[in-house]
Length: 254
Ligand SMILES: Nc1ncnc2c1ncn2[C@@H]1O[C@H](COP(=O)(O)OP(=O)(O)OP(=O)(O)O)[C@@H](O)[C@H]1O
Ligand SMILES: [Mg+2]
Image (cartoon, rainbow, N blue to C red; front, side, top):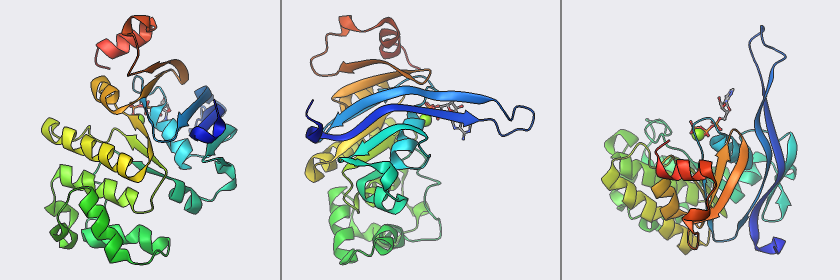
């Protein structure tokens, strides 16, 4: 595949954790083994796998929240090892599940949205914020409110809005609708799809809900105990071709 069409490549990524307790201090657990995959520009890649299979660890490494010891991660043709976290946040943004705890409760929505723009010394803050609110379909009057004065769905949209302010090329979504009512989930997912197309982003989408992941993704990676067990296309795939564990995962909740 032509490298230039890829926004992201992972090459032979391994990740280990060392025990913190004195009793098991020398015990090293391999969390990710030989993870290699590409993501094409403009596409959404889903990752499914049981709890503990390593989904969030992959996202944490891409975002630079965990430090990469072995293997290579390339975003937009740049090895992330050469980038500071400050620069990385311009390339890639991560959104998590727990919206109720991810904002400072004392700040207004306006303060929350201004923060990344101040850190990155971006001008025309107010205009940018109003454009982004429009994109995620929230009214301007949310700006003066505090997080506790918003619903879960509205908070997740604020979270998405905040992550989009720096025009990331890559959006990493880790269980972003799991804590939301089923009726709100579809709205938030559609918001992600809409902004993705509007801003020409690529997305990695992690969820326990296989149907949601299929709906959002062009392709899906199946993780099993820290290895890539399978990879399948959600558009043309003949589901009879799937490997046994993939069939199990895609037919039963995990
Ligand atoms: N801070 C940590 N310290 C030690 N081990 C950790 C830590 N975070 C994760 N792990 C371990 O790393 C492995 C992968 O965890 P990870 O969070 O990536 O899984 P996951 O697929 O995202 O699971 P879930 O679906 O439950 O979110 C697990 O065995 C987990 O116990
Ligand atoms: Mg996780």
